[in-house]
Image (tube, rainbow, N blue to C red):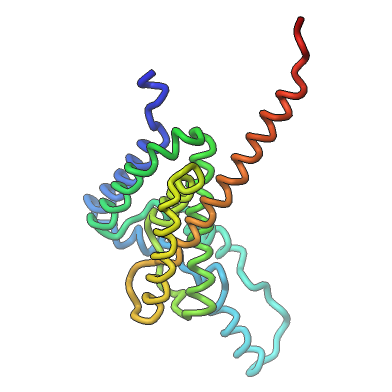
Length: 227
């Protein structure tokens, strides 16, 4: 029974984040890891390239070019996924992993390991994209790298919100307020990523729960009667 309820996915994610951070810290490669794997919004949204292409077309007309080169696409996608496993310092990773340990155990047991992992990873990606769109097109600071698991962890909090912890919605309201304040005062915390991750977690959990309910309902009505 203890093995059955052991939060294997949460523990694995925590250990993986810890190993990556420890490797960077002990090898002295932490700065390079952040530079090579941090998500840069302007890179995937192609803001800088669009501005450069517009200037080039005015000065020297040329044939149309694709918005992203073939070599930049894999790098952008790698950063989009890998950035959620990279942290800046001990305080950053400690806060995130404590939050994950607290929230993840309940969320994993509530919806099961496969759904939990799917929501965690998807929320991390959506969080980065949500933050990136705002950073690139609204705040115009999309050249700053985004790192950390907080977007994905916000998705885990979204699971908790759907499965009964309605107080999580108050947390979402606070993140929106902080995001507005941060856009004015330039706080070094990606509150918009928290908002995007939470929304993704809520939406995906609701969809997966309804699919499971429909599946069980369909199975119930198709079961043959027994005498």
